[in-house]
Every structure is written in C-alpha cells, then in structure tokens.
Length: 122
Image (cartoon, rainbow, N blue to C red; front, side):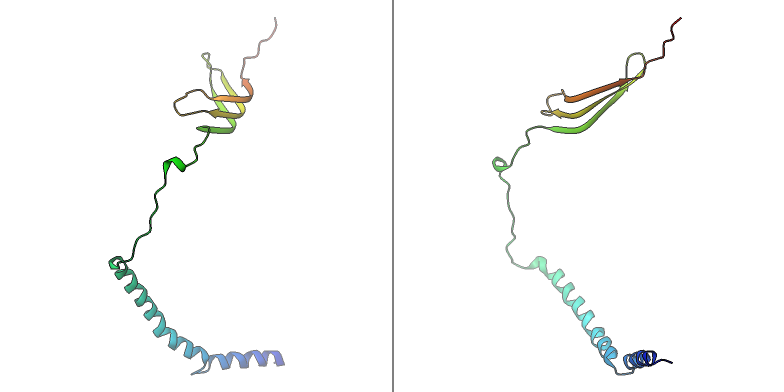
C-alpha cells in the first residue's frame, strides 16, 4: 500500500479504537440528549401556568391605509359568446373596478376578436 493509504488506515483505526474520542462523545450524548428533551418538555408543560404578562396589540382602523381601488388587473381577458353563438374575446391592457358596490369595470387599451363565418361571393 501507499503511504497515503497507510496514513488514512491508521487515522480510521485510531478513530474506531475502544475508549477513543468518538466513544466518549457517544457516552456523553446518550445522557445529554434525553436530559435536554426532558427539560424542554417540562418547560412546555409548565409554561401555560407561568404568570408572565402577555403581549398583544390592537390595530387602529383610522391609521390603516386604504386602497384607492377595489380591484386592478393587468392583461385582463374576457371571453364569451354572442347571441348567435359566435365566440369572442376582449383583451385589456389594464382594468380597474373602483369599489365592490360599483359593477362597472373600466378597461384600457382594448382589443377584441370574434369568430365570423366565412362568406363567399357568388
């Protein structure tokens, strides 16, 4: 074997030796981890009974910013059929509904498409 392989093998053997650093760490964690879990569980069980002051806050409705419009869309698309059953679509660059009480939707930068039957001249 090469020197590097011997060095690596010796390091692994030293790490795995009985009573080594790894064994001491496992022995410590075998006691420490359950102890930490027990302390956390005790804290969670008894924390509702503590007399600490709760912190809360109230929002003042007067201080809250109100939106200027109820609904704003970009690249809005409306599709449907006319009374003759022909499909159509309306596309808008933007659309705004001022409030929920207003049923009108103001649309800007409109384009429309409708499927029309082809008419052949006689």
